[in-house]
Image (cartoon, rainbow, N blue to C red; front, side):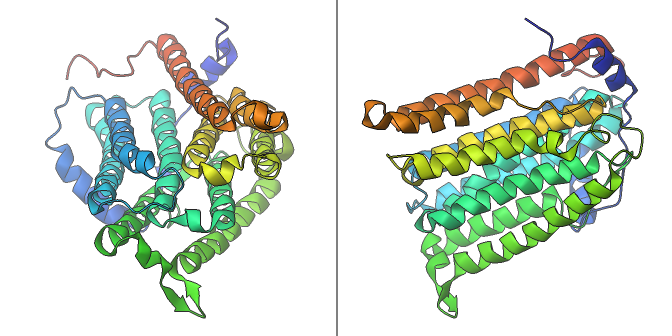
Length: 371
């Protein structure tokens, strides 16, 4: 099998230094809480294990909700939402702990920073859909469609903007804040039921429409600010890969992904996006996660972003199936696309881990023997 990373990329990865500065709004409280819990964690637990456990907890916690809400309009028992809250809280806490554990045991590495980002972006793709399910956004399919795409654009733009800094700068709103908002939404659905989001509160607008509308406006301005910054900073700094690349080249995989989403939504004779939104947006979220992880790897290895990505195979296959009419069930194609996108994400991530760890002569899931 052809290596995912070249020798030159691995060499630049070895030289990659991950530093951060600044704090988000909730960092002071959450870092203290995570520090307290960290004292209970043995020294032999690797930071990357903590990262993966957080992601695994979220996947397990949200699976029942996704299974019983295929159209994002269903109302399920309160404990479904409570389970999601537990999963979101777990990944939030463990995400804050992995970096602390790395510094605690002295096992920080370039690949550790990439693993942390990969888990974050995958969790974001899953969390966005769980957010939609909790608010029964299936009753407003157009709003749900644009909200998902804008969320994915936001995540990509934030990682892209960070690639222009030699030091990662935390803004007031980061993953901790987004996860907290998701937990708050699930809490409302657990206590009052998802029907609470249908309450008309202002000019006969439903609560869900107001919340999503405010979110869309905020995300739009964050994305615009990030894009203006990227266009102004192009070619500056030490990262000759992403920073020296054409913005169109870097954004190309995400643009293709979203164009395919628009085309599929309009061309599908079986209304696959409207009839199976949970599965569709999960597939799209994982495809987005793969593209963003590729962006993160390109940043760490100071490389250019590829023009196309294998994660586009699933969305492209689903779009092409829309021209076959009733001869092919688009639902089965969607299931196949979901499988392919998931496998692509997992295989790529594992290959990057294996090649990086072999080159750096470190273990991804073990700490130094002295601990």
